Structure formats: C-alpha cells, structure tokens
Image (cartoon, rainbow, N blue to C red; front, top):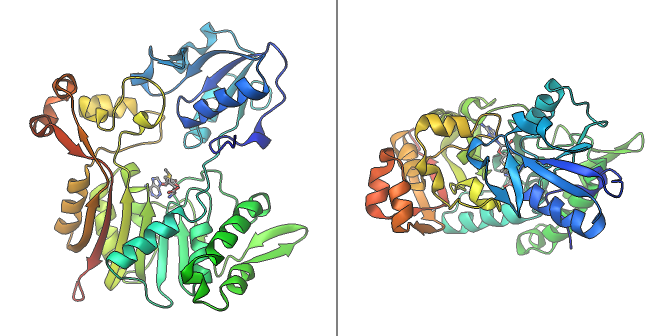
Length: 379
Ligand SMILES: C[S@@+](CC[C@H](N)C(=O)[O-])C[C@H]1O[C@@H](n2cnc3c(N)ncnc32)[C@H](O)[C@@H]1O
C-alpha cells in the first residue's frame, strides 16, 4: 500500500524489539502503525502522546493516548512524531523536555500531495460561477507545502502567487526532493481539457523549473511564494488581485472577520474569493474513538482553547456563519453549497454545550462548504 501521511524516506532503521512512543494521534499515526505492522513488526509501541487534552485517556487501535507531560512514565527508546501540522511545536516541546532530535526523537510526517484535487475544485466552481479570465492574478493561500496548483495555473496562462502561514514541509525555491510530485501534477494537468486548449501549456509548466548546481529550482519571479504570511494580514496591495483561493484553510484562522476584511481590501472590484472550508471537527478524521463531525460543539470556548493548546488551531465557524460573515463584510455571495450534514443522536444533542442550544434544537448541522464571493464593482 502507499503511505500518504508519512514520509518513508524520513523513517529511521528500527531495531527488532525497539520500544517506540508515537507523538500525534491523527492520520499520520494510523499510517505509521500500518507501516510498522508491515515493515517492522518486531517494534513495540508503548503509547501515543498528543497535545489535545480531550484525547487523553482514550485509545487508538488499543494504544493509550497520553498527556505528553507523562511521557517519562512510559517505556521507549525513541519518540516518533507523526503530526505534520504540529511538527515544529512538538519538536520544540520535546527539546524543552531534554530530548535531542535524531538521538531521542525523529519526525516522519508528510502532508499528502493531491495532484489536481484543488485545481479540479477551482475549475468546478469556475463553471458554477465564472471568475477565471485569461491572465487572472490568482492568490492561493495555504498550499500546504506543495505548489502544484500554482504551477498548473501558470501553465494555463494565469498569474499565480502563493503564501502560507506555516511551512508544512515546503521546499521552495529548491524543489529537488519533490520533483516526482511536480512531474505527476504536470502529467495529470496535460490530460485535462483545459490544458489541451493551451498549446504551450507543457512548455509553460516546464519553464518554471531550472537546474542550478545540481538542484532543481522553482522560478521565484513567476512563482512567488511568501511565508510566513497570514490570511488575516495579506501581504498584497489594495485592489491588486482578481482571485483569492484557499482549500481547507479558513477553518484554521483565528480571526475570521479580519480575513473577510482582507479579502475585500486586496480584491479588485469584481474580483472573487473562492473557498473550500472543511468545518468538520478534525479530530473525527482520526481513529481516536468518541468524536463526530460536530463534536467540537460539546466544548465551552475555554475548553476549546485548551484543546487547541500546542495544536494546529481549528476554529468553530459553521458553514452558514462563514456565508454571513462574508455578506456582512460587504462581499456578495454568488455561490454557496454545503457538502454534508450531520444529524445528532439524542445522546449527542444532550452533550452539546449550552452555547450551541440552537444547533441542539435543530438536531442537525451543516458540515463543510464551498463558497464564491465577489467584491462589488463599486466596492
Ligand atoms: C490542512 S492544510 C491544507 C493544505 C492545502 N490547501 C490542501 O488542500 O491540501 C491547511 C493549510 O492552511 C495554512 N494555514 C493555516 N492557518 C493559516 C493562516 N492563518 N493564514 C494562512 N495560511 C494558514 C497551513 O499552513 C496549511 O498550509
């Protein structure tokens, strides 16, 4: 099987009988457990640490999920960090506890590359509500370490730019280690009808890459990437962009109102912001028992802040609330669709925090959405 959430090249040689403590109870952890079962079956996992206090005391595939402060109470010769979003803070946390990188711990997480996934969503939304014009200046916020969408848009004749708040394992401008992924994206792109309509799409894609001293470099002029930079404070001039796009990013911002204000500021009149928002409680993506797509509504604001301490932050803005925020922020919502609904059981309804009594009363909540909002021509 292929492993998307762990980088096999980063995995060390494990000795037979070696005791491991894993850090991060998400998808990377699930994949690492599969990898160990297949390729290092004699290793012994003693516990899984996670900074999310709501996970402590639960179990993942029978392994206890523990408070990192209690790591020393467990047997292990090595800690393996599987989280990719939390890799830097967790490494710092372990160093502060006296563990040395390489010697006592290693990080093996990787964010999956979806070759044309976001590209296809962008084009689908463009069909529903046309916004792409030849040579559009398009900002992609939060690429997650891989600029395949940006390269594809450049190949089709647009003027992309990119920015991210966190590294997510990005290699830029040196992309030598990720060239297999860029080649995969190029091959997939050239099969699309959109690329077939652009005679020089392949040449444009290839022109972004050049060799320097045995390394492959992305062209920083034609493929600008700014990091760290936050959605709530976009490093762009007023009215300078035709399109702002993001996929699985808005659910992580801390100040949604500022993001809306910034979108309105940097878009040209008539420009659009295109968003896929994965509002689902991210804990329910993993295999730790007891979470559902809206289980974050069980917590008070204070509890939710505690859950997010030293974690990759997730806000609790629901799809319709995002729609209202953009409308109140002076942008016209031209397209909005929710991607799912979650119906609560009676027991789950009772567990919802009183702040979400209206959700409990409805018994159902929207989960995930796509949205296209436009800045008014005179806005
Ligand atoms: C779950 S990843 C999604 C990556 C990619 N868009 C995808 O669909 O695979 C979340 C991305 O949002 C970025 N991000 C989170 N908070 C952000 C913020 N406040 N401003 C800009 N980017 C942010 C992260 O660095 C990361 O690249």
